[in-house]
Image 1 (cartoon, rainbow, N blue to C red):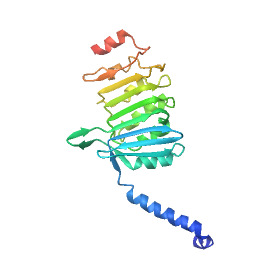
Image 2 (cartoon, rainbow, N blue to C red):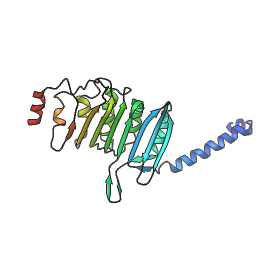
Image 3 (tube, one colour):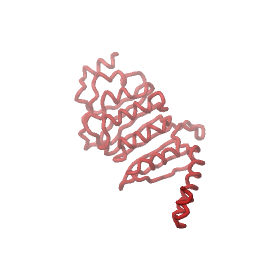
Image 4 (cartoon, one colour):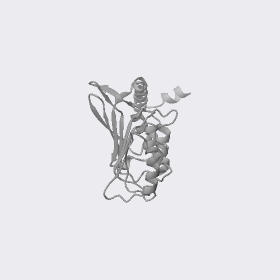
Length: 228
């Protein structure tokens, strides 16, 4: 029955179908061959995600419509963000997420890739981020099947909604975290909601920490955590 119906179609739709079938075969043949990257930077402008990836020998750039999550997932599935050896140096995998690109949809799309991420940098106007979405991201990538071991986290020159940087976020960090920098922009008035409940995760040997003023912390809290 399907073949009979197809027989009534004119040439152009049949050509579209042939092209689609060929594209599907090409996609399936290359999908398992991921491009290895040591750094991936994702920003957004004019309604499009801008993905910039660096390998040991080149840099590539790709734009994806922000409204099409399926296309974003396809683009991310073509690369593998991982540590690499280059000229005798160990280059740690680094994920940079900036500005309005950082939404729940993007964080979920990145998390499902299960990349072995070592470093994360967030920057710019992050008003699209919620405490739940950011905490869930780190909880997921550090989970049993998450694949990541993020040791360096920098949240730089940012503007965030109040309460995003909180105890839950600190507790979602990997046990091997060694650097945690929070440096807001000069215009930022974001409330940092870290309390003494999570300080024990930050005040550990060989940890490098920079935090702005936290209204929920006192000198007594800091002193107690350092002594512990």
